[in-house]
Structure formats: C-alpha cells, structure tokens
Image 1 (cartoon, rainbow, N blue to C red):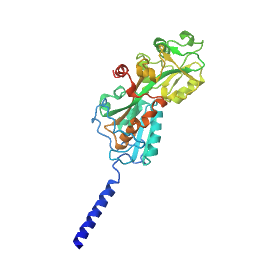
Image 2 (cartoon, rainbow, N blue to C red):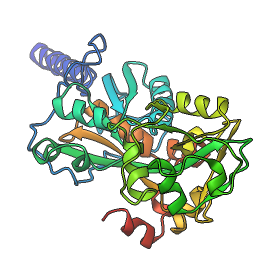
Image 3 (cartoon, helix red, strand yellow):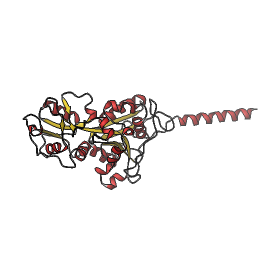
Image 4 (cartoon, rainbow, N blue to C red):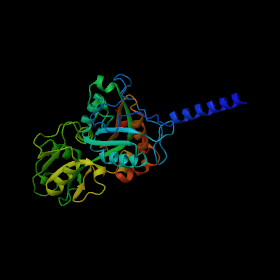
Length: 333
C-alpha cells in the first residue's frame, strides 16, 4: 500500500513539472530590451528561401494573435521601410501589443530600400516595401528573403486644392515631373510656376510612381523638395499653391488642403485600382529573412487575419483578393 502511494505521488509530481515547462512559452524573438538595430534571434540563412516566395504565417482570426501552440506572443518585433505602409503597420502594432502585452513591436519608416537592406542584413525582423525585393537588392541579398504580401497600395498625384487642376494626361504628368513643363498654364491650369515635390531614390513610392505613372522616366533633379516623409510632402503641397507631389491613398483619407489628381480621366481610388482602370498602384510587402521569428510571423498573421484586415479599406489600403485578374497579372510582370 505504501509503495502504491509513493508511486502515485511521483507520477503527480512529474505531471506538474511537465505542465510547468509547457507554460513557459514557445515563442522566440529578440529580447524586449534589445535595441531596434539588433539582429533577429531566429533569422534564417540568407539562402533559405527565394525572394518571390510568398509564405504567409498561420492565420490569426481572433482578437489576439497566438503562436501555433495557442499561447500569447512574447518577445519583440522590429520593422522598417515603406512610408506608404507605415500608418497601417503602426496601427496594427498598437492593436497587436494591446492583446499581446509581453511582445514589443517597433515600426519605423525610412523608405522601401532602407527596410529591405536592413532586413537582409538582419538588423530588423521585417522589411516593409512597396516593391518586390529584387527591384532594390541584388540577387544574392534578395534570395534569402520571404515575401508576405499584406495588401495593395494606390499612389496619387496631389496638388494644392486651390489650384483647380483635377486631371492630367500621362504625357502631361511625365512632362511636369521630368521638368519639361514648368508652368500650370501649359496644362490647363493658372499662370503659375510648378513646384515639384518628389521622393528620394530609396523610396518605393517613387519606384512605383516612376514605373506606372511616368512610363519609367526619371524625375527632374531640380525638385524644390525631396522627402520620403509623406506628412512633410502633404504639408508642403498644402502651403504652396503651385506645388505637386504624390502620396499613397492612405495619407489622403483625412487630408485637407490637397486635391488628388486623376490620370487620363481615371480617379485614383480603390475601386478603380481593383477593376484595372487606374494603373498607379502596387503590392505592399513585409519581408522576413527566411520565415522570420515566431513573433514576426504572429504579427504578420495578425495584419492579414480576419479581424484587422476588415480595417484595410477604411485606412486607404486595398484587399488583394478584390483585384481583377487582369489588374493583378499586369502588376506581377
């Protein structure tokens, strides 16, 4: 009888230890007190996955993202890159951390080129980009990254709302941004000098606009201002009645004092992007080295999950599934 009692006590103790170990959490990531420039603890080797591979993490359909084991997320996530994706990524980070208080998410801008370079080097966990990695990195650096497409982004030319210009042809737009047309009167506007506000070479917004709005032609080098801060760009256009620049629709949701300009009669809108009428848009990417850390996977899953994805359109971003087949195919070439 005494032996049976001892055996039962030992079994119960072993079970208690096993449960305690399972509760320690299986999420790996950078410690929460590590600086944003630290390399991710679970970064994959640079040759582990082709850049074109899309590898979404497990779906997070509930209010709180969890790991595959069902535990809340811990650790940290650092991201940088696209200014166009910044509002969405920052809002997602705020909500993600509210439901996962043991996980820190820090998201910065800097431009798509910067984000891709930093994730390839391992100094951030996620590189946000408006363009495919191969457009900004050499083949060897891009090879080790995995592409997680989270939404679409539409870019729009913007002018001061008092200017009175609401539509430009592609030829007129090219002529303005290459510096050939310098007065608004030459494109149906008032007799007023054109002030160019453009983006730096690291900008994915600039790359998309150059490809789809300017027929691949380079912008003039004499712009009045070059900035990858969309807020600064909008403020400059608001304060200068002859200015023209371009921003993502996500920055125009609540903007005042500026006018989005149609191109060849097509208004820059999510509806026209989805049906293929408006051409100046791209996919928004969140790149990781290999599959990325468990915390990074959970954060990306939260953004693409059923709950948060319902907010995309209200924030000015497009749902990839709503693209027409022709529109989707054209932007993968």
